[in-house]
Image (tube, rainbow, N blue to C red; front, side):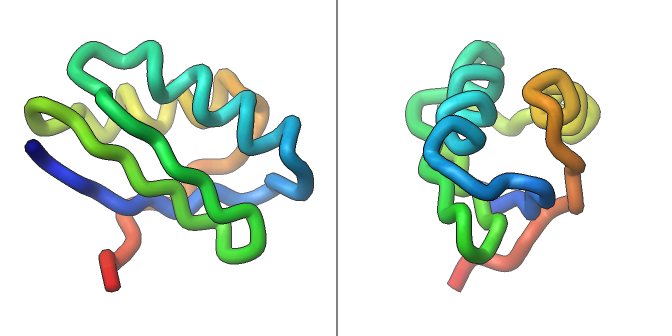
Length: 73
């Protein structure tokens, strides 16, 4: 199992978090998505490494800006 943290900007409500979660969950291998609206941090747990371009495309499809990989604390 792999966990990555990504930065997503432009989210401001529960609907935003739901949209991002739905798009990322649709990626092959994604098992869990957790969104922190305040920080813009999105944690994704997957069975195998995710292609960063696919993550970016999913975030942008949801209508938000992809800020890159974050640091897990």
